Length: 150
Ligand SMILES: [Zn+2]
Image 1 (tube, helix red, strand yellow):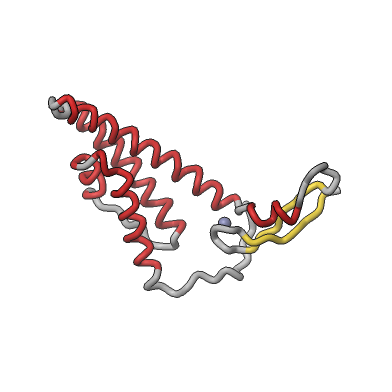
Image 2 (tube, rainbow, N blue to C red; image 1 turned 180 degrees about the vertical axis):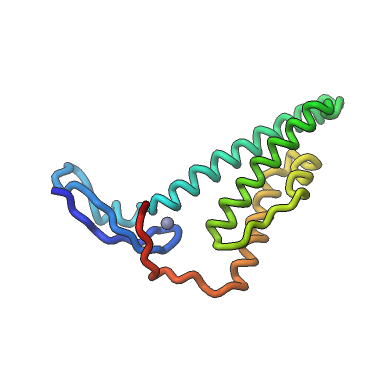
C-alpha cells in the first residue's frame, strides 16, 4: 500500500511529503528519510553539475590552445565566449534562484575564465561565496515553510 510520510529536505530544510510502497522489500524508511532531498534541490544539483562540466570543458579548450602557445584562433575565441556566456548566465540564474537573490551576472564572469582557464574551479567557488555573502545580509530563510512538490 502507498504510504505518505513527511520529511525535511536535507539541503533546503523545507518540509515535503514523500510517498512509498510499504510492500516494497528491504526499504528502510527511517534511513531513507535522512538522505532524501526534494525534487527542486535534486534538479538544481543536476543542472549545476551539467553547467559546471560545460564550463570546465570550455576552459580545457582554452588551456590546450594556451599550452600550444598559439593563442586562441579568433573564431574559436568567439565561439567559446558565446558558450561561456550562455553557461555562466544559466549558472548565475539557477544559483541566484536557489539562494533567493536577484540574478547577478556580469560579463567579467566570462572574462575571468578566458584569462585564467586553469582556475575555473576557484572562479566558480568565489562567485558562489560572493552570492552567499549577499544572502547573509537578508532575513533568514524559514525552514518551516511548506512547499508542494511539482
Ligand atoms: Zn530541497
